[in-house]
Image (spheres, rainbow, N blue to C red):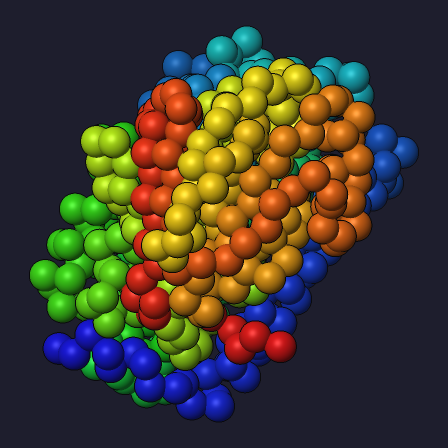
Length: 542
């Protein structure tokens, strides 16, 4: 299978169908929220009717004292079923499923399950506050009787459990026949609960209707807030592809960058199927290997496209292995910086980036080889010595998850008065020149974290790397420099140059970083541009 086959431009229908799917998903999210609100409103209206006695005629017509003798077989079966579906047991089961889903990285589903489970004790508060008594029955002393009569606790709990089990089945991509079985089983469980409560004489018709409405409202609200049901529904609407192409993609993903890997996997698989591609190969990075072995494995399997779902470190590792192979790489930005994606104008939204990956055309960009005292590696974005590397080293991962790019600013405040170092710098083999500096940046691209353009002339297609040397002496200089960068102006106090080869020799070991990852310390750093080394799916540049 050719590694260049994915370079063929997509048909015009592909973007249009992707846009149509995006519109359907937006409409689906809106409808889901509307349904949740309507069900809550229906429950509120029904509750008002019950409290004001407007449903008394219904209860009189359909409610009767228990026809079951206290110790009869029928009474024991009805009570056993009521105990088996006790709200406390159902709550514990749903919480258990939520913990299991979280462990399986189905975190949105876990959130929805926990919110649904919370609806059961909230029901108890509602029923207790309303204080509506159950009809007279000799089975009122059963352990299955919980709270007040309205809304019925058992029916509400069974409705919630049946709905969430159906969603769980869908989340595991079970066949349509399995879905139908679970749907029928859920309906049967709700009907059995209604009959059990009626036969025991402990729930009137209005109580049962209230339980169903509350259960349905809780379920739909949980799915809407958790963002699960819309995604599942939109995948179901994608349908079968209208055409088939002999292409296969590999996804190299960093599991620490995603809140819910299960939903990411379903999203990608659905889009790949809709585009007519063959099933996707999934390759997970590890703390020991951010993507190198996975990229080699993808090449060995002869895929047509490598999708990288991770941060800048994952992108650098995969790009280094794909350099010079002609294998197209597409980005699904998932980190804090996403610097290569930002500079190539790749959408940061996962769905939009995925559609671009499957329908866009590849662009050849430069990579840069860095060689230092005891190592060598390729990078795609930037290398930095001195202050830049110190800031990266002091930036806390936990803080990055909370305030994103602001975590770098917090780390920078710790180095308001950085200590300079001296280095000899040679450009394209020319005689070296001595410089005092606190930071040296070498950029294949110009925009950094926070959207600041620090290298205004840098482009990853010109065969050159841009060099910035900085030595502000005071805190006020750093403030002025930051303000000018935010305004898109080149600040004073910086040395800017361009070259295809750069040699740096420092008078002492200096910390350095590659694409935001600390690489250690070095006295020597040699930089060489590799023109057009990587093929990346990116939108056309304006």
